[in-house]
Amino acid sequence: MHELGIVFYIIRDVKKAAEENLVDKVSAVVMNIGEVSTVVPELLTDCWRWAADREEVLKGAELKCNIIPAVTWCDSCKSEYATVAHGRKCPNCGSDNTWLLRGNEVEIKEIEV
Image (cartoon, rainbow, N blue to C red):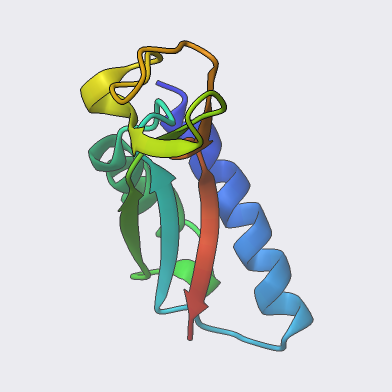
């Protein structure tokens, strides 16, 4: 379960941002989680609750996860398509000259105070 390790990095970054901005209480952290990032949002929030409540600045803070759909770009026909539904092969032209455009991110979007 790598979600716990990710939570420790989120906490580190949020605590640093709170300190730099003289914030003593964070109410929520909003994350962008890509559909194919290999992060399981439910596990992330479970780990968050356990770890965040051990930090005074984060005690009771909510973790909100926005799921970012995976989209692939086809260099052959210059089109985008849903990655999970079609995989690496472009459904428009059949090419495998494709690459993931978005959907693998794991990033802090907002820190609510």
